[in-house]
Length: 336
Figure 1 (cartoon, helix red, strand yellow):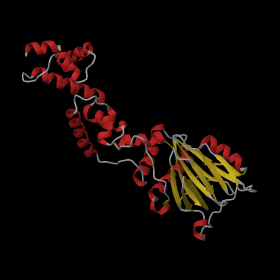
Figure 2 (cartoon, one colour):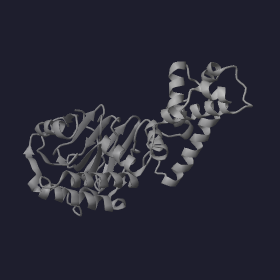
Figure 3 (spheres, one colour):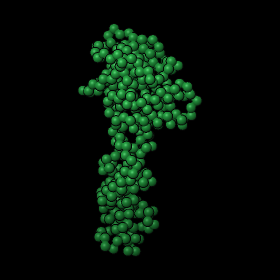
Figure 4 (cartoon, helix red, strand yellow):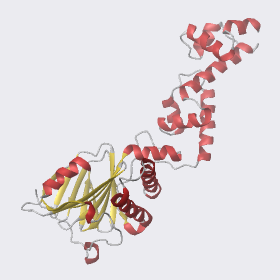
């Protein structure tokens, strides 16, 4: 590996961060070990990556690890200047806390430098290119993507269609103290009682961590108040009625509301207790029914009216109409 120069840390930044306790000796898996043996373990339990050491480097690595429900807690030091490379993390987020030393993160044309007392979150689809100083020690919080998506659903937040993405930027420990104290508690629980905790409680802890991340870090998710959703739903109903003869689909509604399709489904489930597709079909049926009942409406025949509103399968249309209004379209027209 070609040596990559990392600027020396200040005397304050180079000291370990002792105010937060992230895993103790009881969680130790490796101590004074071969860095590549530690890397192999990390590949299996924390995230797929490739490791290369500074030329001539043969540091002694250390690792502590605990699994806590569906998250992983890991404290790691390679004991040598090390470079970690991965194409992407796929379905997990990595929150990296620098406890000692320095780290540089290469992301495209950008380079982010982190010192002791700083943290950063790496997105699942971002390539990983991290260089750690010889004295670097870090704590990693590993979260599956579904945990953050479930948290958004629970709080009625609205991730965009491309998914939840955090801004690649460093944060200082002292700006996120409540998060760090929470993780200290989680580490204590993982080391003391993880095996005896009920799954419901483990899931609760995980949701609290995910909620903290969503409310404290910068990302692309809209944390709108539920009251604003009512306005969005009314606007979508108006849009459907204004374009009732068009071939509408959930993607049209998502573009109109600037929401993800997932959020559109949740919106209709909450307000209409049905899917967007079924809701649109019912509005079209109601429009056909209104036309059949209105003596002033002009249409050539029932077939032409059905086709105008997008019902191309006439037999199925007639049956669906009867299930909804109790009579066939021809019977309604004859009565009128």
